[in-house]
Structures are given as C-alpha cells and as structure tokens.
Image 1 (cartoon, helix red, strand yellow):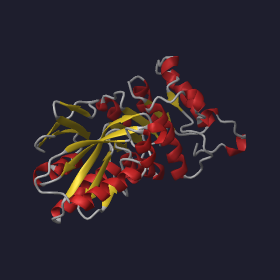
Image 2 (tube, helix red, strand yellow):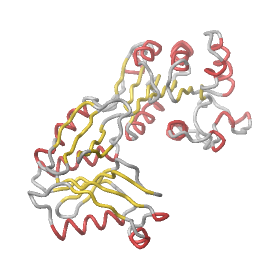
Image 3 (cartoon, rainbow, N blue to C red):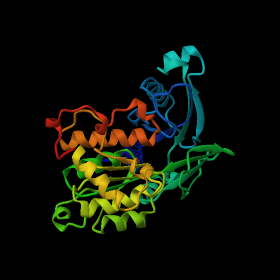
Image 4 (cartoon, rainbow, N blue to C red):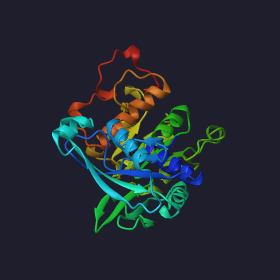
Length: 336
C-alpha cells in the first residue's frame, strides 16, 4: 500500500511513459486553516484526469479547468500560484476560516527525473528534489534527516522518502496490518522476528523483514526522535530487551501489546534492567488509544492513532489511552 503522494508520482510517471502531458502540483505554503499539509501533491493530466489532492476539491476543479482550457505547452515552465487571498476566494475554493494556499505547478517532462526518483525511493533512500522554477531543471540529492520543504533562491526543495521509521517486533497478523497502514503513512517499516515459523509465510512488498534478535536490531538502528518501536510477540524473551533499549533511546513512541496485568508484570521485569521511572513512564501499554478495539485491524488502528498523537505532540490530557480507559475485567484479553 503506497502513500497518496507516492501514488501521485507513480501515476504521473505512467502518464509520461504513455506519452501524456501532465503537471505536478505541490502545496508549498499555507496560511490559516488548510485541508492539506505542506508537501501534499496532485497530478493533472492534459485531458483533465487527476490523482492526489491539494485541497477539499474546489481548487482541484479549478486546476483541471485551467488545464483543459489552455493545455500544457511543451515549453511551459513551473509557476507559483495562490488561492484564497480574499474572503470571496476562500469561500469559492472551499478554504476554511479564510485560509490561503500557495502551490507550485510544474509541467513534467523526461528531464523531470520522476523515474529516477521512484527507483531511488524503492531502494529506501530519503531524497531532496530540487526544482529550478525559472527553467524547470531538476536535480536529486540525499536529504538530511529532518529536512523539510522550502522555497529559496528560485529553487523549490521537496523531500521524498520515508521520514519516519517504525520497528515492529513480531511477524503476526497484527504486524501485517500495522505494517501496511504505516507504510501508507510514509513510515519506513522494519519487521523483526527470529522465529522461522512466523517468517515463513511473510510476504509484504515494501516492508523489510529481518531475523535478528530484536534488541540487536534496536541497538543497530540508532533510534532517533523520528523512530517508533512496537513489541507484538507476547514473548518476554523477544520483547523485554528490545523495549529496554528503546526506552533508553530518543524514540518518540515505544509500545507493547498485552493485558493490563501482563503490562504490570512487564514493568516489574524492566525495573530489573535499571531503567529510571521516567524511562518506564515512556512505555505505552496496554498499547493504543481506547476505541473498543478487538480485531487485529481495530487494534492496529488504535496503535497508529496513539503513535500519530505522540508524533504530532497532542497533549495527553486530550487522549484516552487503552491503559487509562475504565474497563470491566471481563473485557481484558490477551489481545490487549
């Protein structure tokens, strides 16, 4: 499962290969409220077909109408346009609360480097694509960790590739769903399971599967503030040491599956590893937000919701973690 913006690039590349003209539209700035974030993309084909999104729909309609009316000349160069500067425009284009959005519109061609970009993204690279607005010339270079989209000196720098990392311990059904959805959310996902019987039937394109011991993987990964670790095996021999190392790191999220009772026992075991109370408090368990989840897919959504809240700095007072939710003992299960 690809992220929406990766789907945009793949579709645009296919259109170019088929001989179609198309434009790549990128959100480069917003003021006030905006339906889509900076870096969101859209591709418009010469006949008006579209993939991706830069707003709630009205701006897309205007972009399609413009392409159909004027076409995409072969000598066209990139341009920067703004929508929603006036209150009337904001209402017309569906921008909430008088928001304004600035877009880069780039006519694509053989020299746009979309094919090379896709090949290097498939290899797991984090790349910076530099578009010279006056000429349409494009170069690709490795992106620095934490790099963000910026427009400077008439050059648009966009960042492509996995900007967040998720390490999943265990290769079960829940791991499969979690890996699929996280990949679509622009995570680079690594699944670790030394148990051959769990790895045998694992086949998920775009997700790396390793058979190292989980604690070795966590150490080798050098976790940073853009990394998350989720332990899903229920096996202390696999989970505990990896969690210990993760809790000592800068990872923005560390979580483990299990009931409240099992998580209490896990915390007691982790205390033996000389973790501080502050480090232990970083452990999310029972994992996920409380949404009444029971099936693997529902539990996966709960985990990703809690991860997303942690990544985006949502105050804990606004959340109801599963660990804090009032539940009758009869509803506790090994799945939680």
